[in-house]
Amino acid sequence: MRSQPPVNPDPSPSTRTHENAAFVRIAVEQYQAPLLRYAARLVGDPDRARDVVQDTFVRLMAQPPAAVDSHLAEWLFTVCRNRAFDIHRKEGRMKQFAEGAVERVAAVDPRPGAALEAEETQAAVLRLIDRLPVNQQEVIRLKFQNGFSYKEISRITELSVSNVGFLIHTAIKTLRREWTVETQGAE
Image (cartoon, rainbow, N blue to C red; front, top):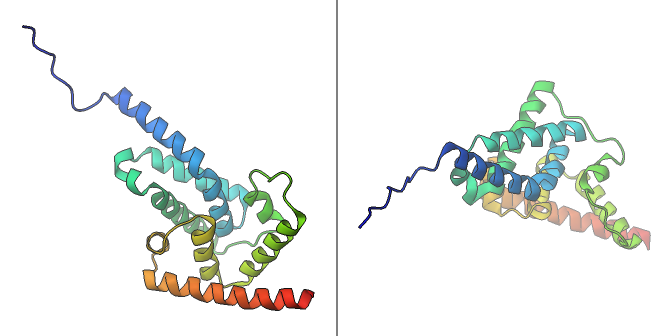
């Protein structure tokens, strides 16, 4: 009876490297567009946003997949946010988007055949969101553009869960009121 060779519980470095590369590639495919939108809002420049997102994925490559896999989206958005704030601190202020720049970054793949009315409504809602205080804009975008829970937003922004809830509630209340004023004024 031949004995089986011992099983190596620790995969070889080349196997780990291949697994890490596949993990990062999947993460890039899934999260690059939402991270670009988020970073562009934070830094105010599409080129710098791409740099922030690239740096985020470079930092992901240094992480063992098992360490971040259970909370990958939250980890990516937190690193992206922190890197954007590093740039903000370095430059001393955030720049505002030029007219139309947000739409170029946010619309990675234009929806063919989208109705003009839907586009006008979306533009109007985005204009209303842009009028909100910056902290409300951020939590609204994390919640509704990226689908994070209050708890995840809390960890990304370093605000308490109740503060996140308050900011979202206040922002929605303001948006509803402003939407009513805007739509009734158009009639």
